[in-house]
Length: 326
Image (cartoon, rainbow, N blue to C red; front, side):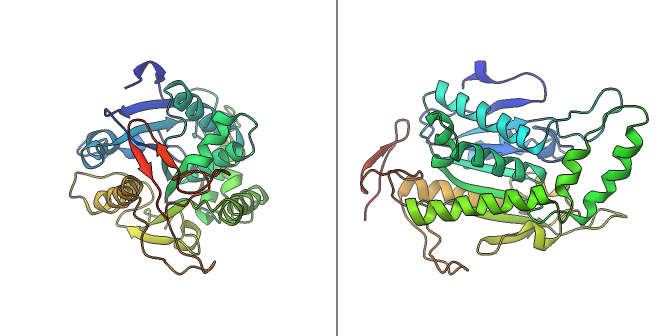
């Protein structure tokens, strides 16, 4: 594992698993008030499942977790004032540099993102798509799939619970209200992000025959006294598969063991995508609002990235050769 690339503390990228001959990267991105470790750690059992469980089920995946300042208020210090775009830039630049330094910048890439982390991931991929530097462009070109967990694509009415806290916090210390405002339904910034993200996906599908697989998980249970933080409608995307996880907005990312139903669901979806990448076996077409098959892997220059090279070429992803057959 490239331990020398991991950052100390709560922010930046940390490597969790680096098996010999890894052929896919899986990156975890936490949400609002979250943490690159505690968001994914079950409190009673202390199981940090991306590090303690997932490597067993996905032995060919390099696993990373990304942290950023997603607090809206700090008790003893100034809250970070970075915007959603700033966090997206941080993820894009940190991950692109890690992959470039480890000579794995063309390796297939999968994201697992919770809540605000899904919007950060979308922003990072938009930055990647529009970048001039190839190592940044590689992020979007190599992205095979995204698992969204409780991501408020349409905003969250319950995001308003944080607004009084941020106003109160101004009496004693600086708070970050911009992040909360992005999550409000009707947010112009959120609407623009969604439009740009889905335009990017559609343009890539039409013009480069590249499809990014998406699976959405939504919360089943209410948070006491508040309700569902993100509604089912906001947490799902038309034309893409979705299902619920038995837990509230915070519990839906914390699993107690390998037989936890939530873990089985999430790890199973990741396993399916990795299996298809390794075996170049496209699933049966799924009808969508675009009336197109949901193939994970298309040509356009490679197994999971866009380009202009002819179809059918061999792809070398770090000691594993994949050949797309047509």
